[in-house]
Image (cartoon, rainbow, N blue to C red; front, side):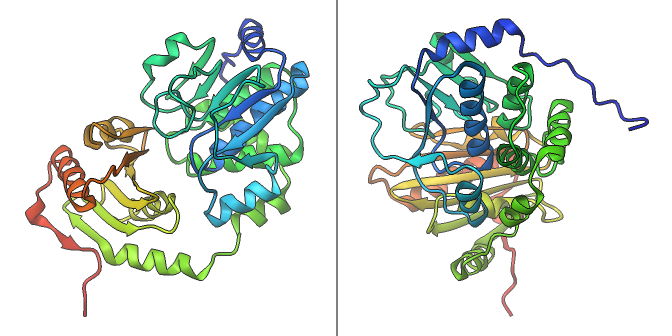
Length: 349
């Protein structure tokens, strides 16, 4: 395309591929991602398995914890990435030659790998870079990229492996959702992957995922979330109470960041004895991955990059309202806004 310079060097060298292959062992390799995986996690995990199998003949298994509840994500799981299986127990990993964490890191708090087990492989794009990575056989963490899917695209490209239509569709959708169609935190590397995957994907299946049917409770949850939203100058907070699925806070934050005066949005809600929070910032504003580190309490874990971040805090019998009040106060302090300026998003008639 005339006038468009989309050239960048692929950082995945033959030496890095060789080191990755060595870290995986002979298989089977267990590929894990974060709790309640999003499209980027599902796609990048699938792409990692595709790489190990087609480049080196290494058998693998894909396993996730938590729930895949969002309609689009659930459709993607069944239609494009059905190899994933849900598990609850990770206590016995003896039959695997290694563990690969994709789109998460040891110590991040959003995966259920036992703390005494060190993965052999970590591929991720989130802040912060965890200290445990220094002991991992192969670690590649690049917070500058818009998605982990982009990283796996580079690995496949370096290994001269072309994904099939289902995988290309999953990777395209994972990259698209994590970067908001290249509008959020995207780099030239993300753009290159986006354009190439677009040429390989199955458009009919992409449409089925993007237009997945929504249950009635979705609209009730969004309505309740909007009613609960409060404005504090340029900061927006929505406490959703008990959520029917843990990723509702993230979906609500994606909606609210489009509010005209909003510079940052914090959405919180509880699910299964855990407080989940999602943070969104304008792409030209504060880094969400750094901001979330200042607002999560000591007992919680958080991470992110660019304009999006999230965290989890175990309730541990602590009063939920007290915890929420503390986190909201930290958020407003970092944003330089005052509690006294509170106004509801929706005015009652």
